[in-house]
Amino acid sequence: DWDASGIIEDQVAKIRAKVGDAQVICGLSGGVDSAVAAALVHKAIGEQLTCVFVDHGLLRKGEVEQVKHDFVAATGIKLIAVDAADDFLEALKGAKEPEHKRKIIGEKFIRTFEKAQAQVIEEAGAQGKEVKFLVQGTLYPDVVESGGGDGAANIKSHHNVGGLPKDITFELIEPLRTLFKDEVRAIGTELGLPDEIVWRQPFPGPGLGIRIIGEITKERLDLLREADAIAREELSKAGLDRDIWQCPVVLLADVHSVGVQGDERTYGSPIILRPVSSEDAMTADWSRVPYDVLAAISTRITNECPGINRVALDCTSKPPATIEWE
Ligand code: XMP
Image (cartoon, rainbow, N blue to C red; front, side, top):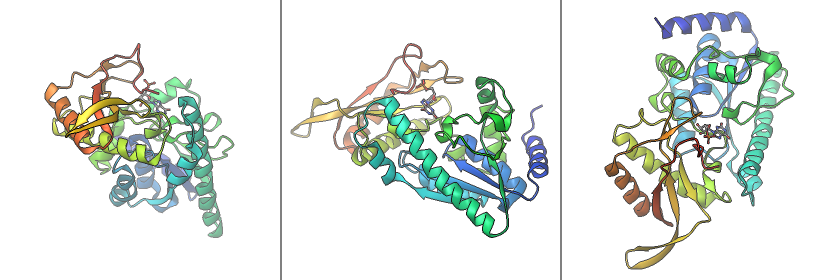
């Protein structure tokens, strides 16, 4: 029998023994894994843990608040939140190609994280304390994927937090290393995390940055955030959250087509809905979302998102397509 509270007790004891009176850092991405890992470590060592959250401005509507307010309220964790949205936008100016965007976002993320990390180290030092450990939300499937090497020697650029500094000398704490996603969710719930965090869909580190096909601008991000929020709201209302693995909502920013809204001819961009069912994201099938739900999403997006005059459904499985468009 699988027992969440037993695993929590066991991990808490192990973490305490390992950490002693040292200080610990954890990067939060907004996703499930880092949130649960942080909550678990916090349960073990409380104030010795400092979390760092880099807001790159590419998260979905409400997610920044969920981390900064709801997560902190649920756990009492000490959090340093860095608002780097303008910085990221500036760095991304002119970038259109997917891998180029990923590289800019990844590098900017590392630099920003390092700065916050330096601050944590300095503040600890001023109190005569030493930061020795870094928490990562590595799951069992990640371990298998990366060849199963152990801990510190093998810090991969963890894609959920966009890649961490390579020259880091911290020892790793990976309390979720033996667990699968559903187990991590059960532990998150047991630890009292809000459902919005525990049941969050997988979301790429580069966030909405790779769901805008074309250059990333503030206006496009705000537009996509709104369309994405509508799609999520309607899918939730229809009770489909736990049937759908994830539903990327994609803005084809450089594509324009003619529409008619009110008495006016429009020349707007399309939004693509990409609901998929999957076990592990390696393969996926497109979700057969009921027509009524699709209709509600389409009507609301075209009414509420100025500049969007078409909503299309991606009915391709993976392979041959990938889940994301970039
Ligand atoms: P694809 O598009 O390759 O996506 O079928 C498979 C899974 O990975 C997520 N994904 C990413 N996650 N950084 C991430 O952290 C990325 O650059 C990235 N690209 C794709 C995607 O959301 C899906 O769950």
